Amino acid sequence: MLWTLYLLLAHPSYLPTIQHEIDTLDARPQLISNIDLSTHLPTLEAAISETLRLQPPVPIEILENISSQPVVLSNSDGTVIVQAGEQVLWSPWVMARLPYFWGENAEEFKPERWLTMEKRPTAFEHPVFNAGPRSCLGQPLARIELIYALAEVLRRYEFEPAWSGKRAVGMGLTASMVGGLPVRVKRRRTSKMYGNA
Ligand code: HEM
Image (tube, rainbow, N blue to C red):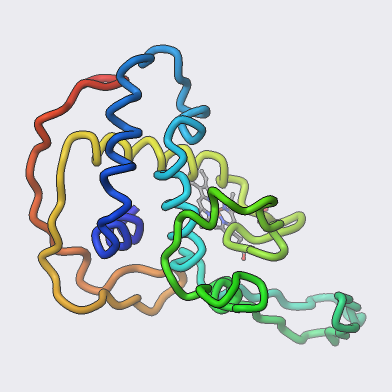
């Protein structure tokens, strides 16, 4: 949520569209279940997906072959043998920046790529929530929480950056933001919408 807010404030041209999507939910508040919110807030959903891409909360993943036998991994580039006791590391952070997959603008914050792509990447191509049998069990809940909470916050408040330069990622298991996100907050005038006020 923090990184989404940061990237939106750093690219404020998306905010009016997102706020418009949120404000126009007014017309049909009780008809939208939380689970369907993303289809009604496409730009917010795209901004969240783009943030998960550029700022994956788990930036590096690791697996170890704990069996006594080699494990064979194959992909289109060839075959990799992981010997017993060996570890394999991969980085969703780095994978999100590969131009051959995401295009020349791979490093840029472009939520619209999620609105225009024909097919979303598979979990193996974009393993923010891991892929395969040990994928994140909380992904659907995490996505609903992100949309719901950000929609509520952006409906009620306006934010102005109170930082300069870029925010740094803290070292750790998950990608925290060093020093948090200093912002100035103002209550928005429009505040009709779904849910409790
Ligand atoms: C944006 C939010 C989240 C991200 C990016 C995320 C990412 C991940 C990743 C990468 C893994 C694999 C870790 C590994 O095996 O090395 C994982 C596993 C898991 N996550 Fe999440 N997660 C998120 C939110 C949640 C939430 C909200 C829940 C629960 C409500 C959850 C529950 C789990 C569980 C139970 C596993 C272990 C699955 C298994 O090993 O079988 N996650 N998550």
